Image 1: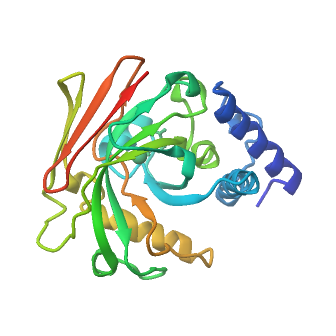
Image 2: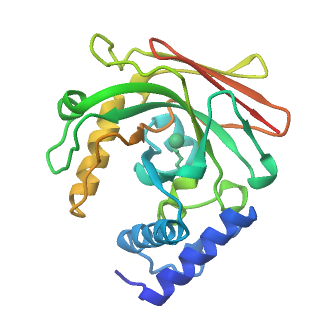
Length: 262
Ligand code: 0L1
Ligand code: MG
């Protein structure tokens, strides 16, 4: 690690304030070019610590930048991992206040809930499928705190991978019999189709993203707990939304989920 504890705490406060006050900032590597990967995850962990100290609850984990479309859109080559806390969760069909966000975008996600914890190293698609309790369709609302969504991977990891809100569909579906690679995904904004994809867009198989997360956590002596929601990463590119937009997502075999922006 190249940053001091004081710098990590200062950057966590800087990024969390930008989130809570809904204002953008420049990417933090501009001022701290020496920052390494461990520093980036340490800043993210300090943002989580701040939220837990304030009484928020950890409710899930997310994989980000797991599809070629997303990597190309954001100009990066490697997935990233973040956390989800209670107030990020919006009920199915619920409304999201744009005034609380900076420049939100939506992306279609496949949500996994595990029946038993998994911990890397060595996790693979089979490990994840064997531990999966059920799957859910999900819309993730990402909202980078960086101006114009311009960042590098270390900056975005520190910023909790742009996590902001998420909406899960009303169906919890066992994965038996579903081929997650060929699950069709259709996302509509105001009745117009804005993104189409299939599960294989996520690292060849959405469970591969969850396995990568378990292996990432394993290196830190952590695991994916049972019962927590894990988002696979967007199946397609993210789509910008604004006040008045209504987004509907249909995932083959997992049902639909919608949300409105007010
Ligand atoms: O959930 C995601 O795939 C987003 C990860 C962070 C990059 C971005 O803001 O697009
Ligand atoms: Mg995502």
